[in-house]
Length: 284
Image (cartoon, rainbow, N blue to C red; front, side):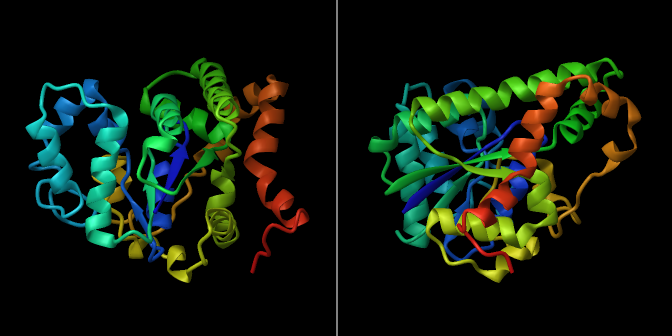
């Protein structure tokens, strides 16, 4: 059994990637697991576990993967449970349903769960922990962030800086733990889906399966994550929000920040070309 951690900033497609990967017969996506593992948020999400729907169509209390873990957390309510112990309980739930020959997808994405997953690598009941660093185009992120927070044009600059700082922090954590991530640009994933998924499969040690190209075939057990996972249309097919193409204010502010532009081009759009040049995979 392996663990594949998807690290990304908000509004960057981590839930969608988790679902795409889960269409593979040997991948089980669990979404943002840390919200139940973290003592500060656990109580809130445990409270709604009887109503909160998993992608399998059942509530977390009824889901064969989440039910034993929810029961364990409720039995130990108020107790301080070490990260590795909690995570191993969740791993055991997956193993009981799917066996040992699977890859667990975790899109908890932020710095703390990434750091804890890497710090506890030797304590987790998995063969290997791999990391996908998923980065969305800074301009697309800025528009999503601004719209979500109902902010004005000046917030674009702040969004660019938040995006840059977050991704540099992720890189710092990876360097500290000597982990070479699988770098994925969100735009590449949307527009060269097969090529990017083939690359991920190669890096993780999986045979590519064409079912991964059909989001509707995902068999994920995502109970906590982006609402698109239960959206009638967005949970069935890839949709790319291209509204930033028409937002001129974002474009000129982006041009004012050459270090953002350079980082964006290298990390979001260089992956496919580099992969082909190095002979790591052959796109169909």
